[in-house]
Amino acid sequence: MNNSAVIRKENKKAIYRFMLDGEQYTKQQVSAGTGLSVATCNTLLNDMQSQGILSGGEKLSGEVGRSSILYRIRDDHESYLAVHFYMEQERRRIETIVFSPVGKILSRKKKTVESADGRQIEEMADRAVRQYPHTSQIIVGTPSIAEYGIIRHCDIPELEDVPLKAMLEDRFGVGVSMENDMHYKAYGYYKKNGNPDEVITLGYFPAHILPGTVTIHKGTMIKGANSFAGMTGFLPYNISRKEQLARLEPGTCIPFIVQSLCAVIVLLNPGLIVLTGSLINEDMLETVRQRCEADIPREYMPEFRIVDSFEQYYYEGMYQTAVDRKEI
Image (cartoon, rainbow, N blue to C red):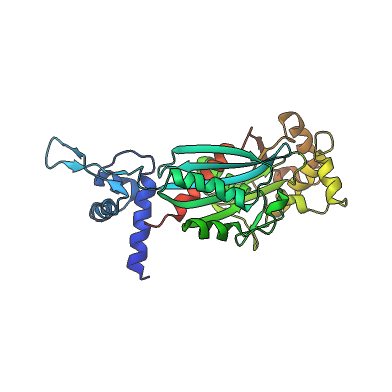
């Protein structure tokens, strides 16, 4: 692809992102919001309208001169399907969320299953696609390592080594993105609250499930060579995995949390660590901080923050990933 074609695509994407709030804009407003020239915006807006991405039939009458066309993203030209699955109180759950192009949740369905295997996930996705046939992407969040589209070291044993990305692409004929669930949560948090110059770590500490962390370093997510970065549940705790999981409960979990956070602080030096999960609460946070300070100099300690849930950030991260992957 030549440079002019690349620049054209990048400029279209800049316009698309600027208009994601679903509001109407004139070409002059788009120009002011994106920094592109009015002439460039005029050409690209008309092109995007002809592609069916934008609507532009309404006109805004000015006091002087010609009327201006108002453009907005067509909220019905496609949809994005997000799928995720997880263990909750030893029950397997699969959830689908359908997003409009501007991020509205059109559908959200959850199912508890005996076995959350690839077939069950395909069936849940199929119901959503049948209801929203203009689905253009599928975004998958997995409580595991997502190694080149294959599920590894999953909390749900029957999904181990399942090539889920390829399965869904073959079944539905659309692009599929699959990442560890913490990656989407961190990306969503960054999109809602982050600063491009910050180093932020999210840590999830549930009962009887290996904890995970993910760090965004000045706008770049640290994934590692095999998307294994941040899997602090695999640190050497000098006990068996079975015993480790048994101790991940209130009363015995603090040493594991402290070791996880110390490893993150030493290796990645975040300025902020955001924590959630059933094992972490405000009452124990000061104890965790003090134990970290026993090994980490106080001047290098990050700010700790607890949130009730990463759910809203999870959804935001999956949606934003779909927007990033959209071809215009």
